[in-house]
Length: 213
Image 1 (spheres, one colour):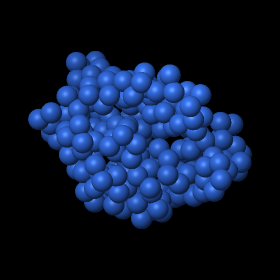
Image 2 (cartoon, rainbow, N blue to C red):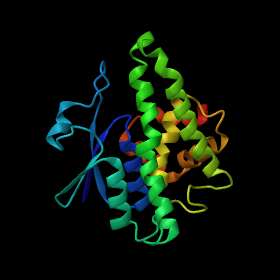
Image 3 (cartoon, rainbow, N blue to C red):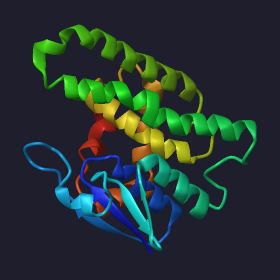
Image 4 (spheres, rainbow, N blue to C red):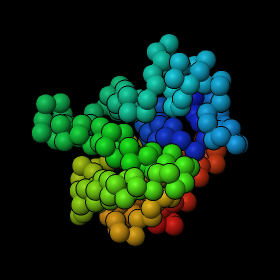
């Protein structure tokens, strides 16, 4: 059985959603953030040296980083449903979206989060950070126009990766300028598997973000 080490209000929620969509047996070990620092608890370092979540353990195999976990679960348990055929043009487009989520797209939001705690000292950086956020969201918004999911009319592994980008954008900048992302996030949060994942993982601060977009 797969064990998911799950941290509250984190990218681990995308793994819970994926496990529910796949319908594979799993168990959850829950961790709470420190009330003051909002950091992960030290106990997670006993599971993986990075001390972060998500981490899965599957038959003795320990995997950290949500992108690697999504790829692993989709390939081993997805039966080809969540990934395009390898070496097809669609496969490489899908790979781009998988890496975009935790690469280019996530960076400006992390910078905004940390710089926001430093006050006026980082004011000169704020226009650049905001510009990068707009660039990433504009790119994703345009790609979603006329589509239900990032690869078209069928859910793919990349949608699990991109879900958190929509959620963190909705909670920080809002999605008023990105209607296709807002609609996409509503579709994600309406899925029965996503709702089951919320019950499995406990309170999730970003779950309401699609209604506030």
